[in-house]
Length: 316
Image 1 (tube, rainbow, N blue to C red):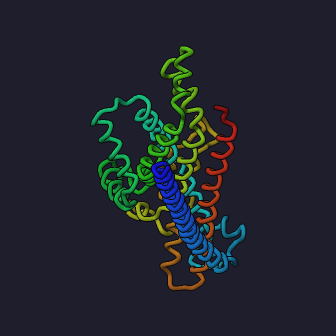
Image 2 (image 1 turned 180 degrees about the vertical axis):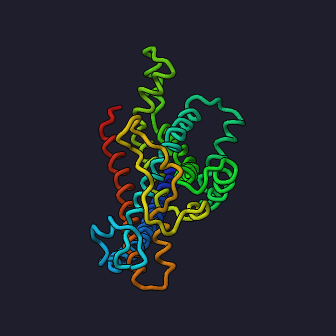
Image 3 (image 1 turned 45 degrees about the vertical axis):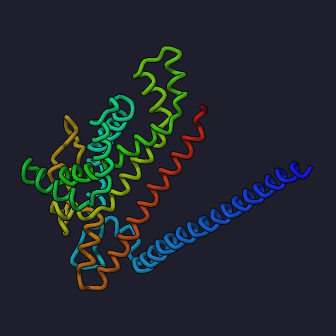
């Protein structure tokens, strides 16, 4: 009888130890969650404080004239027309140059590339390139696009520079989106006789499109606020004209002269106004900063909304 009591006592002691361990782990989880929440709130409150400060400083310039007038030597009549048009054109080149190549490279590396040391080397380099400072891309573009290829300090140079900047981001996000698709989807498609191309195009890319689109939008939202590489390649700080229109009224109805035109973008215009001693120009800079933050938040919010809606529609 005594021998039976001892094992039961040891089992109860072990259960008490397990319960105590679980309790400690739950306490640690709660502490970590609180620390994470506090860190998140500090970041959000800091961003909110800076944004509110910019809005309050730049409030007098929030009007249509500010968006429709060219920069001027008089702060009260200066506007953002050439800057936001330049940003739109530069981002168009960035999108065309980076997104198709980045998505295609991500699909190839994840679905078609053989798994060997060479593909591992490419993966490591792509991941490292995503963390390279933007000024490095500016120096690369200055030597390659401006001096070697002779594209000059133009819209196409800026677009290709930012395209190089976001290309690793698009590749990595595409691969992560594809990896999230269950293997069972591929196996089921192969089981009914689908080819490799049909599996990738009609199933893998279709189901991962929301994640791919999210990565593309986040990459573009990063590009819109970049200043260092654009300054490096020689963007203009004062420009009172618009590039030639991409569309004409005569055949072939397309004009590519705008690709080689001088330009400025929103961050450069903001930098130019901040560098002036007149406090009225600082009001313009604050308004420009608030507009850049709003556009960035809208792009990221759109990415989150699209991803949520697309994932909700997927039926595994």
